[in-house]
Image 1 (cartoon, rainbow, N blue to C red):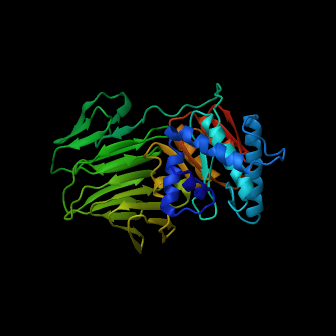
Image 2 (cartoon, helix red, strand yellow):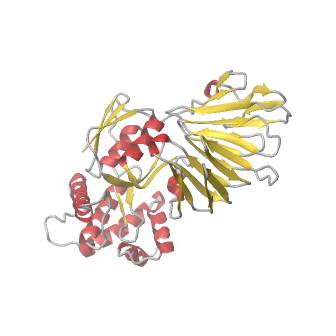
Image 3 (cartoon, rainbow, N blue to C red):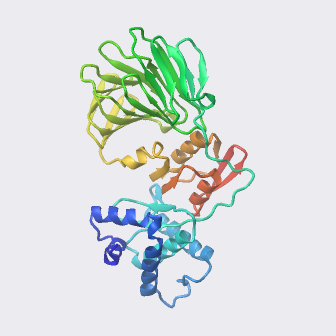
Length: 402
C-alpha cells in the first residue's frame, strides 16, 4: 500500500474506489506491521509538545480516554439539534489525526478488530479495540440453529438432534438433511402438502433447498411455510421474520414470497425480505434481477441495489442502501452503518436470546463491524469503547445505560 494514498485517505482526498481499497487494506490483519509503520509516521509528523497529545509509549487506557472524549465532544457539537452520530469530523485535522493514530495503535495491541466508520462525504475511519473480560453472567453465541421442521401431518422434527440422511417422506418427496446441516427436498409429486421451518431466538441461520432448487436462508426468530413440491402455474411461500432467497429461474412459474398482504413477485433473482415487527416496517432488498413488491393496491418495481420500505400501505424506494449491512446476518457478521441502538439491541435479543431493557435513552447512531462468533460481553464492551453507552448483564437480562 502506498503511504501517499493512505495520507490522502486521512485528508479525505481519495476517490470512492481508493477509499474502498484503503478500508479493505486497513481491515486486513495481515497488514498490521505496515499499519504500525504508517501510524508512527503520522504520529511523529503531527506530534507537538502539548502534554495532552501524549506519546505512543504512554498508557493505552489514557489514549483511549482522549479519543472517547473527542468523539463525544465532536458528536455533540455537530448534532445539537439532531440525532447524534459517533463520528470524527475530518475538518478538525490535527485532533482527527491523533485520534486515528492512537486508535490504530490500540487495534494493533488487540486480538481482533472493531471500527467506527461513517461512509458519508464528511467523515472517515477510526479503529479501536479492547479485550473482553468475561464473567459468569456472560452469554455465549449460539452454537446451533435450534430449527424445528413441522410436517404436513403436524409431526415436529428437531433438526439439531437429527442425524443426516432422510428425515421424512412427504408423498414421493424425501426430506433430506445433508452433512452440512442443510435441508433439501428431493422428488416429485402431484399432491401438494405444506411444511413449516421455524427458527427460534438464540439460533444460527439455517438454509433450505426447496423442491425447485431455490435456496432460502432463514434468520433467527423467523419461519417459512412452503409446499413440498411446486405444481401449477406459480411457486408461493410465506415467511415471518427475515429470509434471503436465491430463486431458481423458471419463467413459466413465477415465484412469490408473501407476508400478510405483502407480496414479492420474482422470476429468478437474489433478494432479502425483513419483516421483523420491531423494525416498524417491511424491507425488501434486491441484490440481483428484478422483483415487483406489492402491498394492498400499491406496487413498486425494484432494481439491483434498491430497497423497498413498506410502512402501512405505502411503499418507498431507497436506492442508497448498504448491501453489506443488509446481508451481514447471513454472512456471519454484525455490521452497523449509522444504526440506532434500539435496532442494534433488537438484533442482540434475537441472536443471543436475551431480554433488553433501556434504563436511559441513548440517541446515537453506531458504525461498527464485528464477527458474530463472540460472547455477548465482548460485543457490548466494543460498543462501550465510545463512552456513550454502558451495559449490565444479569443472566439473560441486559440493561442499557448512559
